[in-house]
Image 1 (tube, rainbow over the protein chains, first blue to last red):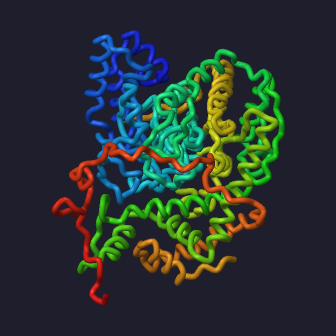
Image 2 (cartoon, helix red, strand yellow):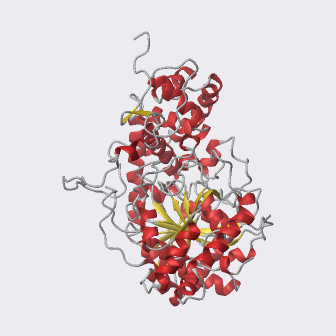
Image 3 (cartoon, rainbow over the protein chains, first blue to last red):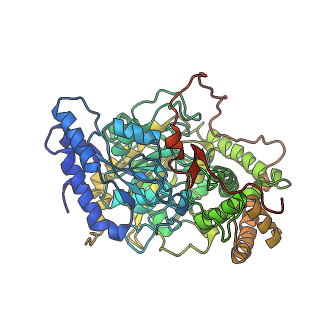
Length: 503
Length: 99
């Protein structure tokens, strides 16, 4: 395997900056890697045909003496939920097959401006509904640690691309854990920023009060570098915050240099320990907590009594918002159109199109959302769920009065087998138990790898959560933990992943 | 148990404009019954004194200046339409024969 593809984005940044390698070389190595392994992994739905040209133009600009950003020339994989003008955007759905957006998502536009080289669009559960990518209309992505297992979801493609060294950086979106749970099961880093911290303009909406775009990487510093590129106010997104944000990369560097948690009060969520969590997940998590404590953190058990209602509230709010957002797929303005035999009215065409274009999970959630919003049930279901949301926010507020960050395992189990939960929607939904509260409250959260579960040798992550607008705390704490683990292991976790056979 | 019937699912499918097959209606009915049972637990803690939250980070209405911004051209807007004519989206008949 080429050494170049093993480099982190920050290492590539230095090599590119000093002229030791060119953007074309870096991009070609990654395209070669995709060609070699993606037949097995299926992380990509589309590979860019002009990535090398884009890379060449970065090299020319650098040669001409232009001051470029730190990530200029570094390849970037883009989750297919984000629209792009140069590649199709399907959101994993048949209904949008071949769709070419007339505009770029703001995060994509910002990435291009920063000189990043988009190399492809990554696979995902259809419209980001799922925890395994098995709901993609284009076939599942396979976990690079074990090709028979799920890479997480919905952003399994982005996480697998990064874990399989097909890209050093990827963009994801996180509505209930779609960045963090894939990070957990693939041994990578994933960050859900504060709600409103990163623009969603051009992110095909799932649930607008929950969706957030964020970085998917192999190191905490790389996530910080990408976060710095995509973050900040966007007038095209009316939920975008106007805050001035500190550099997340600087926060990550400070954490790694310090390598200590002196003075950091870490709240251990009592509801996310014990039964219901796989033994190996618990073991690595407890070891990570002990490591935090040995290095100066003050561990405080924190109770969040309403977190147990989070999944129920989420599976009312999400379908309700999704059923509204997906109404735009009406067979008129874009996407598929299916005319029933013998023709039909616009409503019949619409119904036939949506029957043919949506997969089973999307239909399930649209019907559930329509039910939750319908007269007679609205107060009991959607209204109650919104109240639970208040209670969960209060749990966070109360916890953050006595601690600086909260921690939990990033997911209850390691990667399960493809097909294992496909016929049991509720079992699939339960996988998001640890990640959903952050979305309901809008707080930022990060998953960092902490080792392999002894019983199956598969990756485990720890989740850090911080108060709204305190994303930098995640980077400082996550990076310090990562530095301590690197010292302990002598290498990154992904060095232990099996070699992919390739073709 | 909640009481979701096949008739109700068929009605919801009609509201959502999805021409579900009878098999889909039947499987969705039992799945939704289970799901709704489990999510109904939100009612346990959603007492009248708890205010609802619709948005995680409170924001006021966001307005921009009333000036023409960047917009799509007609060609761009129609580029993805399944059918268009004379610079417009083309749709099937709005009314059926019985209307």
